[in-house]
Structure formats: C-alpha cells, structure tokens
Amino acid sequence: MWQLLILVVVIALVYLMARSKSKPTKKIDVPEIVIVKCQSCDLNLPISEAFKNDDGWFCSENRECQNL
Image (cartoon, rainbow, N blue to C red; front, top):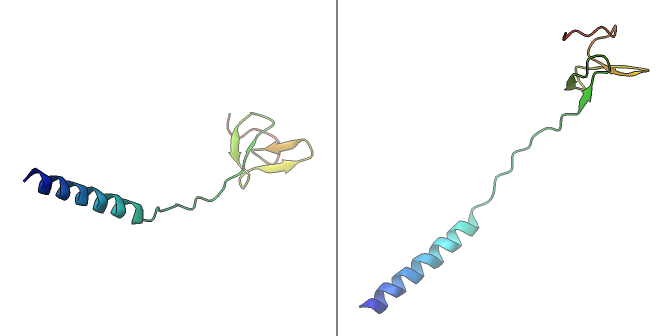
C-alpha cells in the first residue's frame, strides 16, 4: 500500500515540475526615461520637460527655477 502512495506522490511531483516550467514568463515593456538635473535648482526631471542651454539643462527656458 505504501508503494502505491509513493508512486502517486512521485507522479504528482513530476507533473507539477513539468507544469511550472511550461508557463511562459511575461515581460513588461517599460519605456526608458532619461532623467537630467536642473543646473539652477538640482531638480531631477525627464528630458522631455527640460530645456537645453549652453550651460546645461534647466527646468525653465529663462533659467529661473520654476520649482522653488
């Protein structure tokens, strides 16, 4: 009787191991966001919201910090 129980447990383990390996892993595509630092106030902001100047990146066009 105990041999039958061991056989059922082994079959169940093999089934569970095969089932777990067959599941595909899902990857989420996250867009890469480039972050720059404002030279005036040291604020980190996305490059899409920043303004480029000869001196570096700023959070406003006229170099006056809009976040103070």
